[in-house]
Length: 148
Image (cartoon, rainbow, N blue to C red; front, side):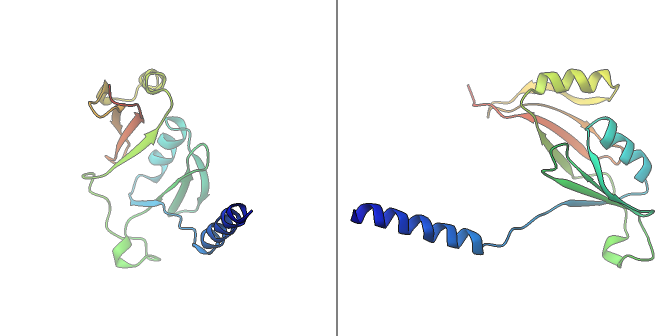
């Protein structure tokens, strides 16, 4: 009985701690002049939906609404200087997890997207391929597997 009470108390304590932990949501923001081209690409190639948009800002979500990414026109008068310079097309990639990298690879090729890294297996277990979005952002499509 003491053991059961102790387990129940620990579970309740754990729930209290979790309920007091604030939820943090993050989305990446890319400053780009290519809003229309970016929207079309993320919708037609990656299946993203539009969460919100106006004349200078676009917020998109993944098909399962599990993540978001935003795009902002450069030098917009409503924005502070830190948000005005456009992305220079280097040093950024996004990883998209999939249960079937081979099927995604074939689908992406049929859409005519130029694949930069053909599908391959990595020693650490990933099966993946990669391509660029219209802004020069690398898109790495990954199926996680155990290393063999």
